[in-house]
Length: 212
Image 1 (cartoon, one colour):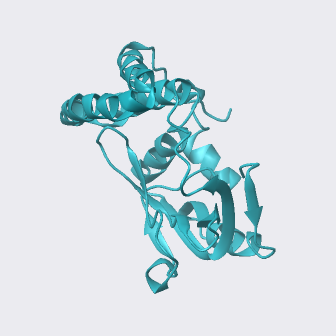
Image 2: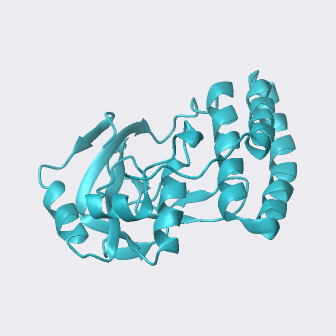
Image 3: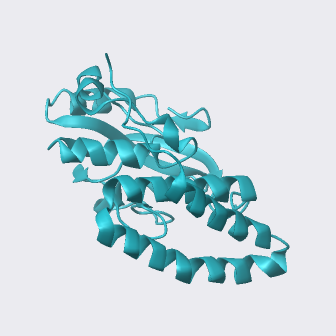
């Protein structure tokens, strides 16, 4: 559970009930922005191979019936994630090679590869203390580690075609990001992401840690 969240008093029991199912490796709540509090930050998520490897479902949308049904998803964010010990024993621990971001995507992919499920639990609700209008997360430090971690993920899980797709997506999106950020005086954030991608393609990538 992140430290920058507010939780509904009853957020925990639905998550516990969800992971009582031995086929469920992890469960995650419906997550709203703290401001505005009626807009979704994540209603589960999905994995993909592009310039970034995760998509939070429902991001920025108002709550509604579409987001109020439990669902099996391919990605859950560690903003709030219930993981039983048996799943950690089966899947392994979160991989510190990623440092910032994408360690949750990597763990989710490894769980799915074992035939386990990831469950979105809308009865559980929390509010993430980031504003929907905030653009301050696009900084050189953040973008470097985002680029690096996404490259590590694709190396481990994407295969040759996934790696080609990832590189092609970055060749398109990074120049656009640089042009977008340049008038804001933030062009170095896009350059930092490019350096991060290169680092992620060349850094050592040992096997994920296991529980002994």
